[in-house]
Length: 193
Image (cartoon, rainbow, N blue to C red; front, side, top):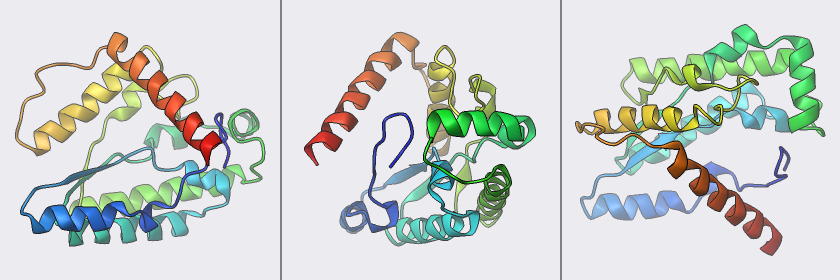
C-alpha cells in the first residue's frame, strides 16, 4: 500500500484472471496481455530479483493460456536522469513510508529491463519501447499533456502486434475523463474492502 492514492492491489501472479484466460484459450479464442507500469513494487521493498521472478511466473502463466505478451520496460531514461537527491524527493512525495535506497531502485530497474530484453530476444514477449518520449517532470509518469500520446503509442504497439493499423489516436479530452473514472473506482474499491 502506498503512493499517492494509498491503494493496495493483490499480487498479479495469484490473480484468478489466469484461470479465466485458460478457459478462453480452451475455447480457441486469442488473448493478448499487455504488461506495463512495472516497477512501483521496488518502493514496497521488492527487489529486482523478486520482481523478475514474479514477471517470469506471470509470463509462464500467460504462455500456458497461449496469450500473446507485450510489455513496456521500466523507463530506461529514469536510470540516466534520476539523481540520488531527486529520488529522495520523489520517494518522500509519492511513497513516504518507503525506506528503499536509490541504489536498490537503480539496480532493480536494470535487472528487470535486462530480463525483459532477454525475453524479447527469445521471442517470449514483444517489447513496446519508446515510451520515454512521453514522460513528465518526474521521469516516472507520463505528462498530462503527453499522456494521450503515450497511450496512442502503446495502442500502436499492440495493434502492430495484431497486424492492424492504429486509425484513431487517443485524445486528451477522452483520456482525462477515463482516468478520473478509473481513479474513482480504485478509491471506491479500497473503501469498500
